[in-house]
Amino acid sequence: NPGGDGTEPLEKAASYLEQSLNSPVYEQNEELDTGIRLKLADTYSKLYSKSGNMEYQERVVNIYGDLLSIYDAGVAPAEHYKTKSAMADALLSLADSSGDGDKLERAASCYDECLGYFTRENSPEEWIGLSEKLGNAYVQLALKDENDQEKESLLRKSINVLTAVSEELKKGEDIERLAGVMKSLGFAYGEMALYEDRAECVEREIECYSEALGYYSADKDSEHYADCQTSLGNAYKNKSELQIDAEACILAIECYEKALTVCDISSRPDDYAMVQN
Picture 1 (cartoon, rainbow, N blue to C red):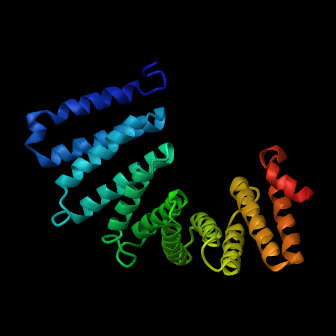
Picture 2: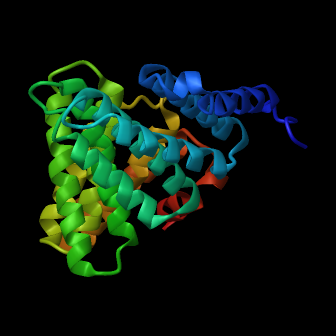
Picture 3: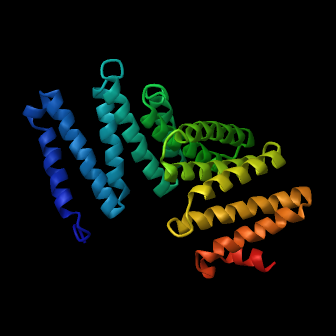
């Protein structure tokens, strides 16, 4: 049912913009040409958001790739790296939808390159956004990698990057974003416990999830709150098994119970089972 999902006007706009690119007027004017390409990328991105058709997002990636050959890094560095960042976002979106590890790796590489231009000192806001995405991408790459040494390396990179992001965010007032970073950092430490000092990693995991819960509200952020309580409960459970710690076991049960207070039991059967046991 073409256009039945509200995409028909966008498809017409994309078709018009594609035709415009072949016009001699635009071919001979770089500013007009890049402007059309940017509008076309935005149009395809909206089509992807509405339809979920990954072909649209693939087109976005290709357009940004074309623009990178126009925006030379040595001549127009700001435009070049802004475009590379946008392409990384499109690749990351495709990787999330398809599970494509190659696209995820390309996205991470793009973010890493952009951080060479948008530094913590001269572009703190851009640096935070790019670093947060890179840190989370490293964790996802670690989960996909079958080589233990490479997994550990990726997790270490993630922890280093996300720790730096959390330090920068603590200078400001974006509590919601800081909560998300601490949650991601807790997850990374939980995975790292398989490769480094397990007891130390579990302690850091507990610290991160506990801090995240200091920012999340059970009323306003119920899903994130429940996720963090469950993850914190799992960390305490691991601590109780590592150290034969009865107090940690009690704290784990309390976390599972708190998670269940903000969501339906049927949606969290594992939490419910932990409480019952």
